[in-house]
Length: 252
Image 1: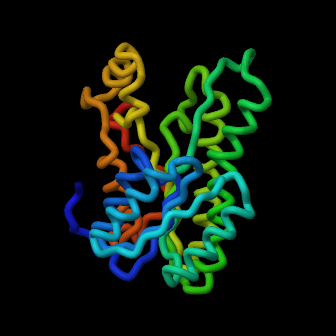
Image 2: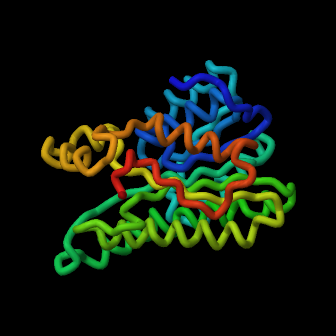
Image 3: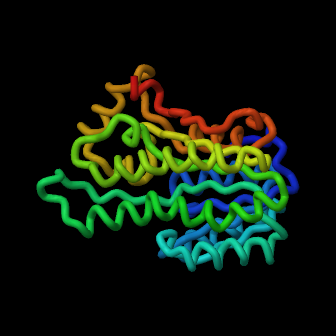
């Protein structure tokens, strides 16, 4: 668990895909820095409830909202609920994502569309729903969690790489549109991170990712969480339109 060194008191953060892995660690870290939290889930009812209890035990206000990030209607309803129950929205972290891999000559249209809908359109849905509040209050922090594979591409991931590349472009364009309203927009691009999903990968795949990195180790969710917390704070106020790779040198 991270220690409190960044002041996010008085801020309300929405984290999509916040019940497990990197998302859950970001939620805990933002809460420990003083932010009240709204997280979304689609199926993880028990995990969401336990995490909300954990945050409330830390003295934070916290709610979990069941929502399909690919649905604009769900995004609008969730953001409205957050504003009503928690008093506003200041930080948006779009972390929800999925992959459904396959080489392009075997990938189905459904495989491609579903990953684009969740990873790219889901990001747009929540930023579109939050943007009016950010503009009205002349303040906001938007962080999209992308991937180094959205920069370099990855074999078997034309859908995922396209979605993450799109989210990076979306974030850069939003930085231009929202900057004059006191809103920063940045992407965090993880490399290989040891989450539950990462742990379940075959050992040879995990070792290949470690061998690719300059530091010769896998990242952990805390590495991403701290980067997000920094960008969400006043310490990151003069950074916008950037893609910060958190990959131990895997990209290079």
